[in-house]
Length: 52
Image 1 (tube, rainbow, N blue to C red):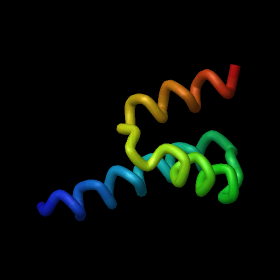
Image 2 (image 1 turned 180 degrees about the vertical axis):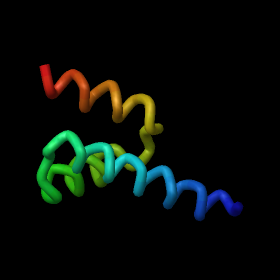
Image 3 (image 1 turned 120 degrees about the horizontal axis):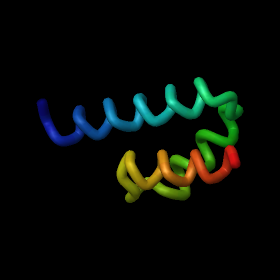
Image 4 (image 1 turned 60 degrees about the vertical axis):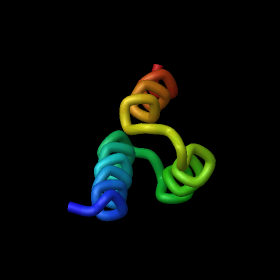
């Protein structure tokens, strides 16, 4: 799998995780655009802190 394909798959996983938590598409797009250099673990931690 190429690096680009792998990154696209990770982004889709992040998107699905946000959707499952009830975030809107607009919120997801904002977070992904603002954090395009972050990895999945960092975004997941941020998402969990937003829920609390």
